[in-house]
Length: 315
Length: 276
Image 1: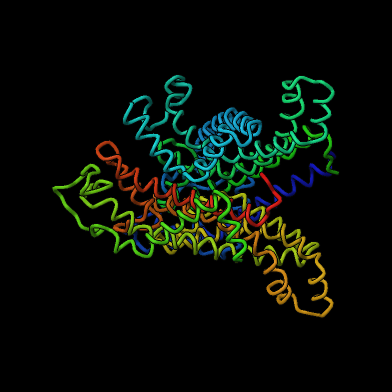
Image 2: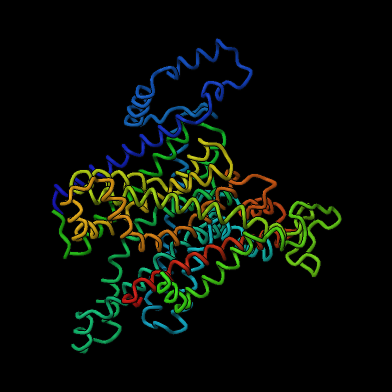
C-alpha cells in the first residue's frame, strides 16, 4: 500500500463529500419552504421576516449561500437548527454516537450469524441446511425493516412481553436495560445484512472449496478442520469485506426506519424529525454526516482488504 | 425470448416467481372485482373483527374488510414500483452505456460521480426528494426512480465496457456513426439482458422502498389502501388486532420475494453455465 494510493483514496472521499454536499444543498434549496417563515411562524411581521432573511443571507445568490454553508462545515459549524435554535453539530453528533452503537452491534451480530450460516450452507450444498440458509436470505432481502420491526414487536414485545417495545436507555444509565432495549432494533437491522453476507460467504466458500490450493491442502493430508479454518475461511472472507462495506448503505437506511419505529434518538430519527419540520440546516448536516460515514467505512474496508490480502497491491 | 422463458420455467425459482407474479397481476387487474367488500366500506359494529368466514383476513379499526383493502391496494403498490424501477433503470442504463462508450477521463469522472451519489443511502435520498417534491404516490415513485438510477448505471457500465470492445461497435465507429446512435442503437440493446435481470431484482427493492415511504407518511396518503400505509395505520392497534398489520406486511414480503425469485430465475435461465 503506497502513500500515493492512500492519497488518491483520500481524494476520492473528498470528491464524494463535495458531490454529496452539492446534491444535498441543491435539493434542500428547492424545498418549497421559506426558511424565515419556518423560523418565525406564519404571523410574523414583514419587517421581522426581512430582518431574518438578511441575517441568514437568504437573499444572496445560491452559490454564495452554498459557499457560506460549505466553509462553515469545514470549520465544524453545521449551522443553527430552525426548530430548536440550537447549534446543529452537537445534537447531530450525540445522535450519531447512539446510531453507531446500534449499527456496530448489528454488524457484529450479522457477522456472528452470517459467516457460519454461509459456510454451513456451502459445505452442505443442496441439502436441508443449504435450503434453510437460502430461505433466510430470501426472507432477509424481501422484508423491509418496518415490516420486520413491526412483526418482531407483535410477537416478542406484545404477545410474549419478553422485551421492552420501544425507547432508549443510555448504557451509562443502566447497562442491562440498555441492552434489552437494543435487542429488537439490532435484530431488525441485521436481518437484511445477514441475507446479503451469508449468500456471499456461501458462493465464495464454494469457489474456494473447488480451488487447486484447497485440493492440494487436502492431498497433503491436512485434517478437514485445518483446511477449513486456515485455507477456506480466510480466502472466503476476503470478498466479504467489500460486501459488508457496501452494505453500510443499507445499514444506514435501515437505521433511519428502525430508530423511528423504536423511538431511539439517533441520527436517523433526527433526520426524520428534521425532514418533517423542514429544518434545513439539520437535514443538510444529517445527510452529510451519513454520507461521510459511508465513504469512510468504504475507505477503511479498502485498506483492510489490502492489509489482509497480500496478493493485491495498489500502487 | 420464448427460449429464455422456457428455461425460466425450468428453474424452481422461475416457476414459483411466475405463479406469484400471475397472482399479483390478477390482483392488480381484477382486485376491485374480486374484493368481497368495498375497501372503504366502514362498519363500526364490526371493528377489529377477527379473521372469520365473513372477513377472511379480519377487519380493521374502522371495520373495513382487510382482504378487500389488500386486493384493491395491490394496484396502488405494485405498478408504481415497477414503473419507477424500470424508468430509473432506463436512465441509469443510458448513463452507464454512455460512460463506457466515452471511456477515458469522461468514464472516470462519471463513475466517480455516480459512486459519490451512492454514498447517500437510497432511503435518505428518497426521503429528501419526497420532502422537496411533496408527499404523495407519484412523487415517491419519482424519488425511487432517481435512487435506483445510480446503481443501475454502475451495473450497466461494467457490462457495456465489454460490449464496447466488440467488433460491431468498432465497425459503427469506423462507419462514422454519431455517439448517440452508437450508444442507443448498437450498445444499449446488447446490455439489455443483464439489465432486465438486475432491474427485476430492483423491483423487489423498489416495492420495499415505496412501502417504507408510505409507512413513514410520505408516500401514498389515506384513505388509499397502499400496503405500507396499511401497516402504518394499523400499528396503533397492534395489540387488539395484529391481523390488520400482519396481512399487508406479508403481502409486501410476498411481492418482494416474487420479484427476487424471478430475478434469480432469469439469471439462471440466461447464464446457464453459472451453477451457483
